[in-house]
Figure (cartoon, rainbow, N blue to C red):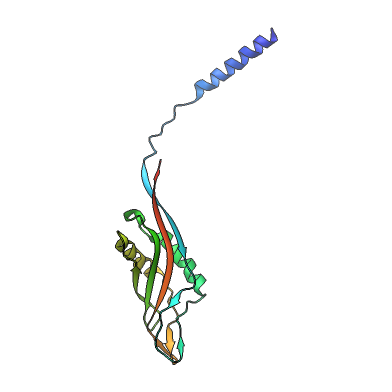
Length: 160
């Protein structure tokens, strides 16, 4: 008899808790697309050769690793990858003036939708306010170019 009463009590308790649950309202969830970025910036950066007997290449305060870290951080923050889905190896040429300021960014190779990506990269690089230490020839600061290679992948994913 105790067993039957215990069984009935458990059934009653479970039934009463089941009635207290509200129906779930999923109206706040909306479908949207989100691009997932994977960025692998390669080291070392390459200095474009300049004819000079006493050439000193451009440098970044804190070294290549510091520039790589800030570039990586800014790419994740400022790239608007909703307009392109690209995967592959890309090379960016940073054109530096005599003061070490980046005045242009050129990207290669040109593939479908890469121009939008290259425009975004110009914006990203220009957001980095710290200048490079300019290259020099015989002690005089000169304009130079730095090549940055990276593997970039942007994949579109549906988030439910």
